[in-house]
Amino acid sequence: MKKVFFIVAFLSLACTQKTQIAVNQIGFYPEQEKIAVLEGAFTGTFQLVEETSGKTVFEGTAGEISPAAFSGTLCTGLDFSAFENPGTYRILTSNGIRSHVFAIDRQVLIPLALAALNAFTLQRSTPGHPDTAVLVHASAATESRPEGALISSPGGWYDAGDYNKYIVNASYTTGMILAGVEKYGGYVNNASVKDEALYNLKWALTMQDPVDGGVYHKLTTPEFEGFIPPEACEKPRYVIQKSVTATLDFAASMAQGARVYRQTDWGRPIAVEMVQAAEAAFAWALENPDCFYNQWLLNKNYIPAIQTGAYSDNHAEDEFFWAAAELYLTTGKEKYYQTLLEYAPELFTAPVWSNVAGLGIFSLLTHGKATEAMKEQLIAFCDSVSSLSQGAAYVASFGNNKEDFHWGSLSEKCCANAISLLYGYELTQEKKYLVHAFHNMDYLLGRNPTGYCFVTGMGTKSPRNPHHRLAATDDLPGPLPGFLVGGPNWGKQDGCNYPSPWPDRSYLDIVESYASNEIAINWNATLLHLAVALDSFSSW
Ligand code: 9MR
Ligand code: 9MR
Image 1 (cartoon, protein in one colour):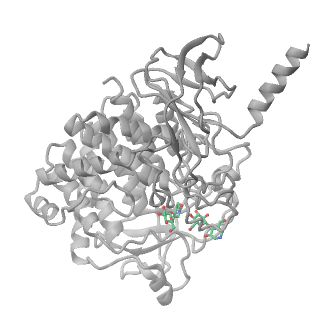
Image 2 (cartoon, helix red, strand yellow):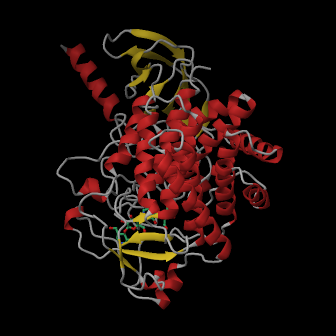
Image 3 (cartoon, protein in one colour):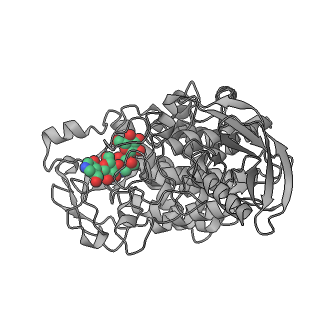
């Protein structure tokens, strides 16, 4: 009796104490490096316990003890890479700490990829926003489409937690998805991925002015809607000023789409439309290279004032490069090759919505057209990223510097770096690039100081309250599944009360936290691409 009581007391102590094991809560491929991190300095042993039978299948000893970045908390690595048998397990340390459950399996990331893909379908605009009669804003007025004229621009995904649709971000998103489709073509659900991307590209086509080829920067309400369901939304929706960045991102993603969709009979007609749209957009951008989107200036000149996401970016060199690269690969025209060389970057940077050069590099690599300089720059990037894992308590190259934790960090740094590492791996067969890409995924799925698996509906401890109007206002409890949240962000621009001063813990699972807990299509595109890529490299 006494003994039972002692065990129960011990177990509940083990469950309530703060010390935790941070582990990828989805799991590992059999041959992958498999490491969990125990918070605290620990020198004992640990077991891998099979979930259903309770059998111990592996025993290991505590590994290296290293201080976590920022907080300095000592952490202990628990390495069980040697164990490769498929199954469902937990870690149990000799001092009684249990991890969340996780799997070891072939194709272990496929459910994640499918959930990330399905998230796009959930994010499709709803009948609450038919967008069949959208106002032309004063900033977008032309002779043929004066202020207040109505255009039809239905469909497409909502951008994020808000209900607006932005060309810059939407084009980056389809670009990132289609890069994965082109490179990892054997992927099981490739057909659905293509369908889903096409759904958004069809909307994007409606955002081009057929008269001059320019593309509206966004379709939006003047201010963000409240947290109300789509069918309750009544604010007028406008298309706003054409911009050079939106127009070039549009050109790039249309050219890329044309290449993908022209391969099937059903896709040929829309592919023709896409190439024409892309070339017209590119021509407009050449005529209007300084037409940047500046919301502050726009609001000085026009009413109503526009307060929603700006996606502003005053450098269009990377957009010129990406668009020229895609147009060259699709049309084979020499003039685009010359332009892409003219705008070629001098350093590789992982692609994000505001710097899309990397997407151009990816496509050129996939089609065997990258220059030697581009390859060298990518390799230099991969080496520099890999070196960031030196002494990292949570093992990954991501998460050791304050600069890693800006708005959207998990996608724009953690995923985008990992995706880039995989292009480097393909190029060089340098195995450490692959290993570091996996480590970033492990970070994202739970091996991090917060202990969160940052994808809704996945793993054991995942975000429940994302800044997501669709999810917050539906009749179902909890979030919509398959969405990667923005993640820790030391900028804390939402003014919420964060639990920790440390950049890597500046995350709050509350609806109000749009700076750390929003969801967004561009972020999910990197999640989908990375999951598919890691899966296809998994049998090394
Ligand atoms: O909901 C908005 C989110 O989609 C944006 O990313 C974020 C930053 O632009 O803004 C959110 O809206 C907030 C607004 O900026 C300020 N008032 C509170 C809004 C959230 O409810
Ligand atoms: O992802 C964008 C991030 O890089 C910016 O810092 C931030 C503030 O301007 O805006 C983010 O994008 C938001 C967009 O403006 C509106 N929809 C929600 C997007 C994700 O938060």
